[in-house]
Length: 193
Image: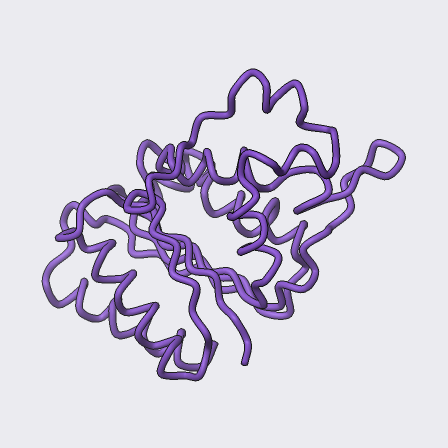
């Protein structure tokens, strides 16, 4: 059975992001995936890269010790689905910290001649499910860093066969109908993921 690692980054269980997370997990499970549901806030993941971790960042092998459990979960995944809100045109700090602390040399990439080479090529499917408070135009004017990070940087270290970036923009003014339609779209995408 294929395994999907779902990274969820929102502290409030009553949030729309939590509803999206529940939908992702339920639909992937229904579609036959073994889901490793990683709720970063509930698990108490620390996003802070310590001085010692930074100093040992390039020591392949030893660099994974502080986050070994998360590295193993990432290495066991055939798919990666990130569920998060966009805050201040970026990831929530806990998700950014996960990428800083777990996407390490020897884990997500290899350095060869000073160039980054992908090292998560076992991840064949990559998706992001997210919401933005502002409009798509505002996000574009700000450069839309989360979209670029997923579709360029995270994509680069995985090189998946399938990439989906599912975003609901203008969440601050979204109607119940708009949120419901987005939730349904996410459900359909996960069933065929």
